[in-house]
Length: 616
Image 1 (cartoon, rainbow, N blue to C red):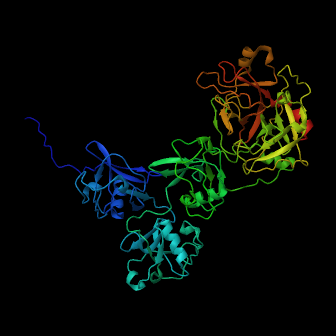
Image 2 (cartoon, rainbow, N blue to C red):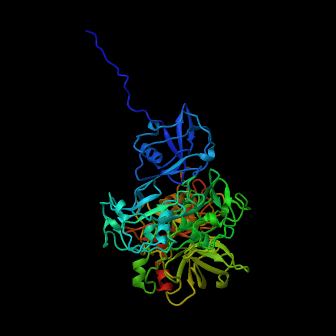
Image 3 (spheres, rainbow, N blue to C red):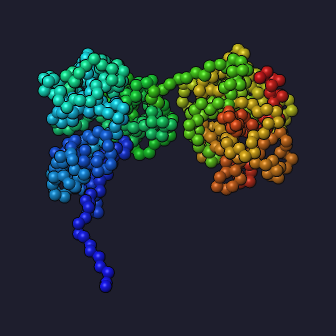
């Protein structure tokens, strides 16, 4: 008997492909749908939160769904594919909602619809039981559950903060009979005695009792009406902004979304007041610090704005723009940045040997793991013992001469050849600690005068042996450089101590030649230690027992230290997470040249000499 199969024509639901574009994150943006081989936009006629609910569901996003109108996330390109979308909010996809026929519309891209699918995070807000998402009973999300807010002490300032957080321009407390709206309020009452100043951007920034502490019932639930701006829910915070290329989400290069494109801001006149407005708009309330000179790297695309002038009290950066969009005289090397919730922490104890032993070699800021040829930017504060020996100039700005290593509050280790050209006159030099970006004055940065320079007595200018020197900083005994998370000494190795032969964790750092130019920001490069025979074969008698050999000799992985990193540290991690300086960058042939590894003065060979001078 022949085999047979039956094919059913019944298919599961086929959803129209959909995506979000132009937002600052994956959970928001202009709605774009795919039809007949082409992506297009959706017109905002009849567009509301019920439609947004369906879009967010189709994309797999939970949280609070919000509709945005009038090309809030920028104008799209290509066709307008849908109009008059009228979902109930319960559909699984936009395909199932009542809507116009494909490509039937009377719209332009200025009416492109958008959504935000805000994840349910601690402190998220919503208004329920009203005629739309702009009015109703106030609920706050905590511990995985929605709960209400008691109206004890509630003011219009509180209402303004809630409406701003929800994306509306302004609002008022609802003057409705409480009894008729208490139905359905059966969950917890999370907040009571909330007091806002009106400057907050988030309700949790106001003062309030502990979660769940109250003396209320649901008859006292706060109810609000926020102004929906009939033509659009678009909030008046102006163009969206975002922070890029920082070490965490609270810092970075400031970028602003204008005319459908992300672009940067020029740093002309950029100050902490401007930074305060950026941070407030993004919801951060701690101290704000401005950063200039492409501190977080150079952006791409247009430079949208120049000469920002904030007083520090504005609600959004848009209120500070006084010049036409696109008018500037800048390059991306002047891109502005900010650090929000800036914290300054001191590390106690830098006055005696015991405390020195407890803090040396600690990297308190190294959550991210080549200058340097093959190098890359280091983490700010990630190498707190890195210092810069700078040449003073008659104009006071000076220039980088050599790298160096802080080994105590008052002593710095560097290379003897750094003083070959300008001599041992202490008035010629200054030491900068806590630096990261050479052109930006930073909070932890400090310049300290030089009290004494001690070049090893056996160093000869025509040789590379004994290439080591000590610099005594100006200041009372062990009270010269102030220790902080960004300023700490490296540990010294023991006499004859060698780094682990298999140690993968050795680095060189500095501001030297990157292969194109000198770096503005501190660079780092992982570097392997090599058997001494490699350097003995390459450099013959020039390589002595008081030197270390290190570097990648493979063509693709070459890392080497170059001019400008002279005197800087080669450090390796010890068992127990402390770091010791095993080498002082000394010499080599060329910069990242094949088969020419770098040569470093071996610090362990000079421990008795160092200790006799420093009394460490």
